[in-house]
Image (tube, rainbow, N blue to C red):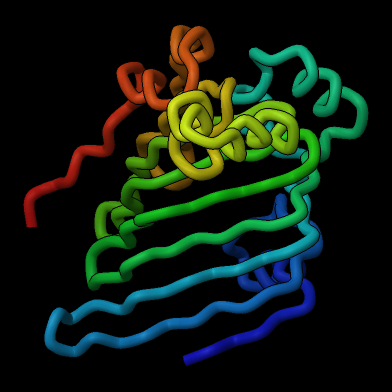
Amino acid sequence: MTVAFNDAGTVLRFLGVYSQLAGGTGSLVLTTDSDADAEGGRLLMKNFAIVDEANVAQVLGNHSDSRAAIARNNRLDFEAGEVDFIRRSDRVEVTRGILSGTTVGGTMRGFIYTDKRQYDLTGTYVPLFGLNNAFQQIPLLGPLLGGRDGEGLVGVTFAVRGPLDQPQFQINPLSLLLPGAFRELFEFRAKELPQ
């Protein structure tokens, strides 16, 4: 199944799913695997923003440029987002998620347990996303300095855990001190619940 949309924010508000997304054009592709009783999916979005989101301020507020951007207009703009996921009857596994904008970006992976209505997501917030990810283009040193795709030279690891309606956000400020691949030493890990 393929669905294209011109304003994801309006659709999500109308459905009562999430009211802090503004704009967003893109597509959602779902492929059913009846043998595995799962659906693989890819969500692609362009030109969207997260608006009036207190939880974003909590995670991003440790970086001075981010604090200034949030305080100025309480809005974080993104040029593109891409999420690959696997949907099962009891959970959605985010296998790869990347958000990119001129000032902020990041990555995310983990689980959303739909039966228990719980988050267990981890990721890396990347300030000054465009400049930060330029380091990944340097031959040989790029992967070492820049880490995984979309994580850049400087980043802060975070976790989102707990109930869908009241998630808890955690950050590890020590991860800001290490470049690229070494940051993985300080990242949070999603805990797969037993089936």
